[in-house]
Amino acid sequence: MNAGRSTRSAGSSGVKTRVNCFVALLALQISFSAKPAKKAEPAAEIVSLRKVWDLAPHNAFTDLVRFQERWFLAFREGGKHASSDGSIRILTSADADTWQTASVIRYPVADLRDPKIVVTPERKLMLTTAGAMHQSDAKHKTFAWFSINGRDWTDPVMIGDPNIWLWRVQWHRNKAYGLGYSTVEPHLLRSYVSANGEKFQTLNPAVIEGDYANESSILFLPDDTALCLLRRDPKTALLGRSRPPYRGWEWKDTGVRVGGPHMLRLDDGRIVASVRLYDDRVRTSLCWVNPEDGTLTEFLALPSGGDTSYAGLAFHDELLHVSYYSSHEGRTSIYLAKVKLP
Image 1 (cartoon, one colour):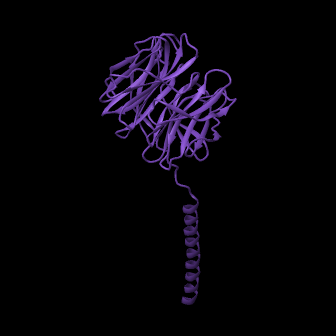
Image 2 (cartoon, rainbow, N blue to C red; image 1 turned 120 degrees about the vertical axis):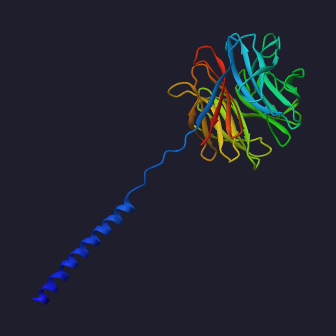
Image 3 (cartoon, rainbow, N blue to C red; image 1 turned 135 degrees about the vertical axis):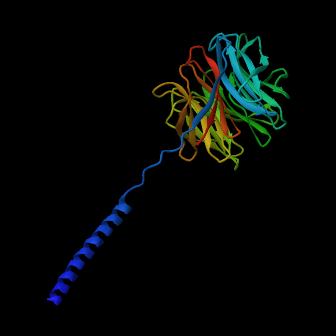
């Protein structure tokens, strides 16, 4: 009897053991097969947005730079998007919150357009604009001004070639580089270099021919590689790569149509671009740039719409500062956004 009871007890124990093992194995399988909840990617955040200027009938086409511990914001103001009275207003600020006029540049024989402002190796401000000429042998000319304080500027110096709009000048290793596009037929893109910012020599007379390639932003990497984000109309933008002496370029189609391109490399190596996007709705947006596969990935649409874009970019105190213009609130106005990046 005892032996029988012992046998039945051992059998019951064996069943329990098998059940416990099955439960343990099932739990183990579930633990391995269950996928953890996917965390949302950190998002960029607008921590501050201010309307900086709206006093002219049309306020547009901005650029932004930090110089001598101050901010300088340049833009065009005029009667409308294209008018004979275009002039360049330059604002300055200590904190990027409160702005005042540092200078206004006028050129009576031309509508001044699309100002770009950079710091030269000699620690001067260099302002470049295109002039839509009123009465001249050329439709457009590109001009440069220089200043040691942002208030007092030299007389204009014509740079590049007539009817070639030298879009944005970028300094690298004490030389200024830029791409200019023809504003008359035949359409072409021309590359330039200068040792002093006043006299530009042609690097390649026709980098691209045929396509209406126009607005551009050049960025230099630590290994001296040059990247270029290039607008085409009505086609999609190109992302180009070049090596010294920067005469030839290799291009990849981004598959995205853009306007007013500008790029900035962050300290961690990421590259951000500000562009006007045309899909769904027109807007000014910030995108990540992937140089390897030639793609743009939008990560933040700024409050904007209608007549908008042409942003300036600067990174300071852990914030990306973005100047741009937009007509989403009615009159085309100048805005300054401070963005916290993920």
